[in-house]
Image (tube, rainbow, N blue to C red; front, top):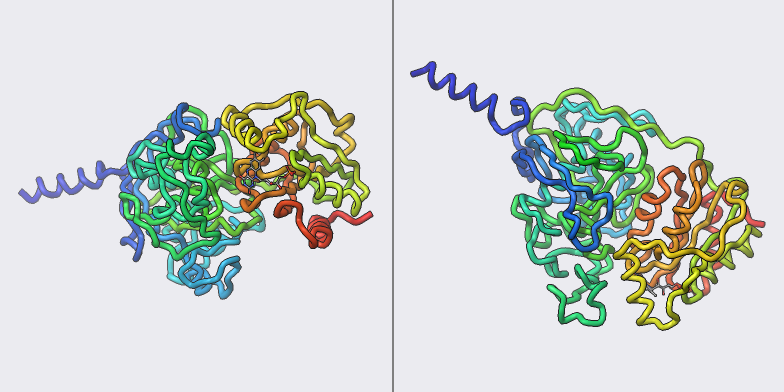
Length: 465
Ligand SMILES: Cc1cc2nc3c(=O)[nH]c(=O)nc-3n(C[C@H](O)[C@H](O)[C@H](O)COP(=O)(O)O)c2cc1C
């Protein structure tokens, strides 16, 4: 009898739900959920509205892991680091405005304080991950999506797209609003509150695994450097082996619903932060093995030095005004991005045309071209925020030239949505360019435009004329 029980126990340990029968390494940390591993389709189906091309569906298996029920709060961050970089202030609000590099440093510091083995080896910009360490870490992109989906295959873990009472996001813009802007009766959920701030973690209902705020509040850094998925089957993938742009997931208080879908991939340079990006901690539930090498920092880029071109697209004149202010302060060459077939001058019509182009990922033909792009080291790239991203003429422009080794510094005129997801869109279209610190301007910028532009130029190392 004893032998039978011993056999059964060892069989459970070997076949106990992990990819290769690793042993349990930790007790469940407080406020963490044990996410049982399994196999799922990562990415989105081709007929999912507002998907991007980089959400290629492929089969992924993840091992068991622990994930925090909540986004990391400001109180938790401050307790370990002694400081709080957040733009909004409140102990129970999620910490934000931390770069990916600060996020991994936090993980290590907290691990050390709690007597756990630090997961990351941090050497300046190079970070490697010891997969067998039991300390706090960021989830991988695959772990994040697996946990968010909780077995669902719909665009969001709730089968009906979220209302502003179920998630903290740019509630004026629920899922599919772009196509139903003038016919809101067709929407699954009606436009709701846009809070314009983060809210206390756990304010809404949890997903089926007991995880709060997987959609909205703040986007959440993952371990992965951004790269194409490919179509082959993967087990415990860890993202691109190179690159220093890191993926963040889930969308934040300032995102349209389409950009907090379970499959949506946002990214940003690992040394930059934003008021709508925070973190959610994970830990191993089974010992991983090996180490994931650090990504090398981007080389060849410069920071705003050299010959500067101001290139902009403007529909109503606001971005043009900002471009002209920059030109008057720098004396740099000015280039307007124009179309062979311009958009309608009627506001309601252009709203339609712009969402149609974005949905089709159109590349409208440009009527003018930069004669000799080689002579420029830095491109100050201006555009209005259109449907929470770049207007597609900017995509045409970015695809027309080779920006490797150059620096792109975005400036964006908006009506309240700041950059939206335009920085992610630019990073995807110009993967080999260095990105400078962007400037977002509310409409035409008002009386502080000159000072705002001057401070931004200085911040990016661009000297005034
Ligand atoms: C088609 C279209 C879509 C827009 N979408 C957004 C948006 O998603 N978020 C936002 O804050 N403003 C949005 N706006 C407002 C513009 O970003 C804002 O008015 C900007 O100042 C326009 O710049 P421009 O005069 O250079 O065209 C949109 C405007 C248009 C015409």
